[in-house]
Length: 117
Image 1: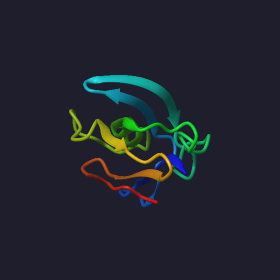
Image 2: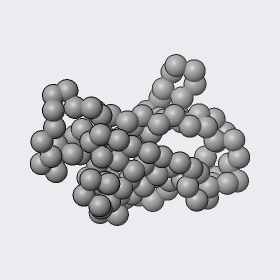
Image 3: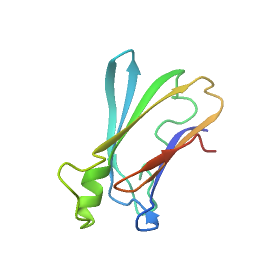
């Protein structure tokens, strides 16, 4: 239970190891940074869930993924400005007894997400 994320690099067909991610709580236009981290070799937070089920609260959140920095570090030649720089996903948590998994499938030119399990 709680909140987790996972990023897959669809250009290279692998987890997005080393991508920088930021987690925020949000209220209206105000965003408060909760933590910054780099994804591990499996494309996940190295410390496990971002929130466990006892610390996750009903509310709105934002995950920000440094797509440009990740692909540049992988040696991908990107145009300037790159099509995607940082991908911000805003989402709500309505039921803290449920697991909220926020995966990101990403390339330098596209991304998709969904509520995973």
